[in-house]
Length: 474
Ligand SMILES: Nc1ncnc2c1ncn2[C@@H]1O[C@H](COP(=O)(O)OP(=O)(O)OP(=O)(O)O)[C@@H](O)[C@H]1O
Ligand SMILES: O=P(O)(O)OC[C@H]1O[C@H](OP(=O)(O)OP(=O)(O)O)[C@H](O)[C@@H]1O
Ligand SMILES: O=C(O)c1cccnc1
Image 1 (tube, rainbow, N blue to C red):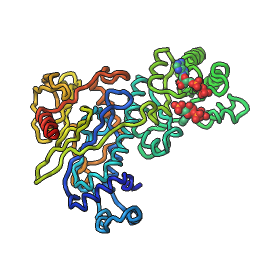
Image 2 (cartoon, rainbow, N blue to C red):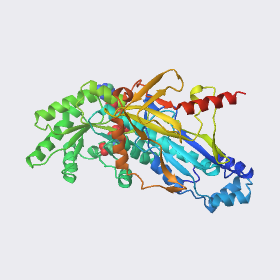
Image 3 (cartoon, protein in one colour):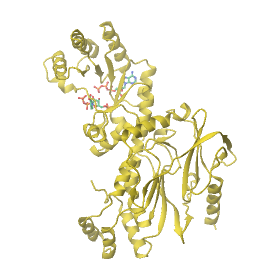
Image 4 (cartoon, protein in one colour):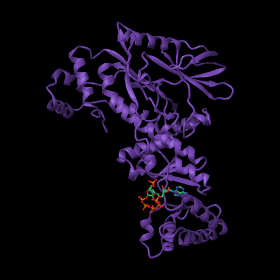
């Protein structure tokens, strides 16, 4: 779908004012970043870039769009004509999908004529804020589940089918093993999995007949929902009967699903019953309003769950319904030079970092551990083996690091309006997320009160920011 009209009216109005002032071609740099990771997490998993780049590459106003603008305001016809011919001609650099990212670092850098940079703001933020949020929530849930697979079951509870569709994509980057969402499976290549509903059991005279019927249709991949009537009294015993019959035929019951009640108690007792019947390899799937905290708690209770199915709380990111990613002007080109621009706020943490910037990450060469991120001006040289980093809010807090490997995080993805290289596959982004997470300590990744990770500014950038701050007070 063409998303060009997915913008706020104020973007069009600012574009018009720039146009009238003869500033439409002024080149600017905007940075996309967030100020706080979602869900009290220490980091976010960057996602949604593929959709954002696709949107940018396909900017196109239609005749109907222009008619709509005419109905809103007497914009000059020459402006509307300009919109009609508008495409994105600028440059975009971004962090790779699946990268572990932190507050206050530039994740997308857009350099373009101001009309174009302004037009793409809203949809770019919407796409990246949404998917980064869900990928991060998924990563939390997957972390709580440890080595157990997590299934995404949220389609019916998402804020609309589009949120479910892209949410499933983001959740896959965040590490879920499969989704129930067939369209997301078809389009993104995410493995799809499913069991059956209570209605399937209710439709038959007795539960066992329902189980046999389902198994007859899916002899090699049956997971039976055992909580329609009485989990331990009839559900598990009926599933065991089916499992034993399959065993006789050299086949296997894949699993049972428990969707209500005390999941710790029921899973332990169900495990005992299955094991006693010799069905030690039948997996137990749990679902029922789960989230990362409940999964963690159920594990400490010794729940014997092998697979966690999570719907609502994952797909709506319950408890943290939005990521506050922003898009701020960082520099303006004046006489061929980039002039840094600053946005002041009463809250020091909200003061933006001006300039045309670069973002690098240092890893310990030996252990591979991520040591810190550094934001510098784009043209700055970074020493290859020793560097002193300092906290931008508390500059006396310093740390010298040595023997590192450096990674450029912000890499060009669109040049002069054209995509560079091939789109990265979802599978690669998911693998990248997994690899990225392995470089961060358990303290940074813990679910509650995570350890802070260093995101520092170069001396030059920090000095420039201070100077601009002082000047702005005059
Ligand atoms: N052992 C447990 N410890 C903590 N929370 C649990 C445990 N077992 C289940 N829960 C959670 O408690 C909640 C149970 O909710 P509730 O009693 O409303 O519904 P239910 O048992 O799933 O039944 P129904 O689906 O029929 O409403 C769910 O969020 C579930 O994940
Ligand atoms: O609890 P969630 O994490 O949101 O996971 C999805 C839920 O959706 C289904 O219930 P629903 O009552 O809609 O249908 P059912 O008849 O299949 O149980 C499923 O059984 C889960 O309980
Ligand atoms: O396959 C399932 O069991 C399933 C899928 C979506 C929602 N609830 C359950």
